[in-house]
Length: 120
Length: 437
Image (cartoon, rainbow over all chains, first blue to last red; front, top):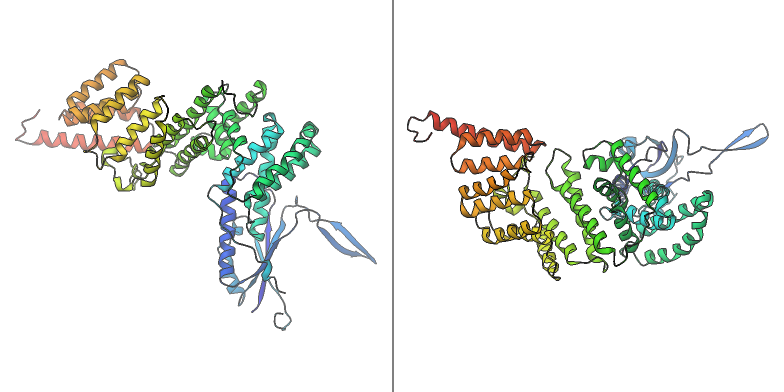
């Protein structure tokens, strides 16, 4: 079955003033979504990305150039990602519809390209 | 690509875990930073919770969420002591105590959350140097984990008002050098009294039906009960009157589900659907009332809990034990000679001896004059006058009550009563066979 990467973009600082109760409620909503996709056998995995210490690598002439970033102070950063098993984009759309992250940021969806080979 | 084994664990969180644990962490860190640095401790706690918010959606909830949170908070606190010179001397203490605290948490998620620190925080928040409204706000913030926004919503106040109140309270605590330790044995009874007053104020704020957010108000009642439970569990504070207050609040909270009807209108005790009362809370209230009789002290809380218990065990309004109730009100009036108690007593007199006797008792209260601004006085008078078929006088009293009532449900209730009163009166006047008037 095809796999899709859900890239969760967020704006750091949006959460700063949340109360403990609100924080718990949001965590519970994320948990409920994860439980739902996991129970349906759709969830392949997911991770949070480190907020600090990111690098952007680029080639400048013959040199490899390492630049710090993106910073967590940036307007929008990638907070983390999930990988889902789904039939197609429509199927992914169904599963994403109730995702709590959409209240706080956007989710970029990309299909993993297995180049026609079955998933190992 | 196979990440199945790294699938996030999904665990449910205990209700109010973050709020109560935030308060526990704040108490622990404030003990180490010093009460004068409570704001730094607040920042650290908030940071730790935000860390959980960013991580747990991906990694799942850790097996011991509270242990995880305290560990993260501890690391952030150590970071802060490295950066903040004012806190550097606190660092050694923080490092030393962290291992002990973490060992406590490693035992499992159900171990008591820092009972000593938390208790000390409750006492500090209710410090007599603060004005009562500041005590309540600070208790909600520092002992219960409410945000400024949530406190403002609960008190129908603006956020800047509450924020100001908290800033002033913290400033006063700094200036007065209030410490975060339990009062000594000599001081304890008086300080405990102040804590109980704060809890009772908190409960009443939630209990009084108001135009405010019903959900938040129920939360206040729950929070007051939770605080009293903490005190009841601790040997230093598990006094009979703590159990009495706990019983009182549980027995009154048990009736909350029946107090408003579907449209949010007030339902009087007499008309409440008693099957909606919370039987579990009533049982707990009665048990705690039992425990409150251990000493020889008879406080206002004991008597009020006794009154609430008489109502709680009555099958219906008519079969209420009015004799016993009147006896309790007489005792309460002796302990706490207040006009409001006298007003409630007059209602019981009316139930036992008839509306005329009740009216006489009520007039005695009214002539004292202290309840001139209290809507329940004319409202009660109107009810009794109605029973005596004195509808014209009753209507006038309902109008007076309406002019004094503050909130939505109370006003709607009075309007409905006034409407019925006028309708009945009109019917009587238009009837050719009327023998009245």
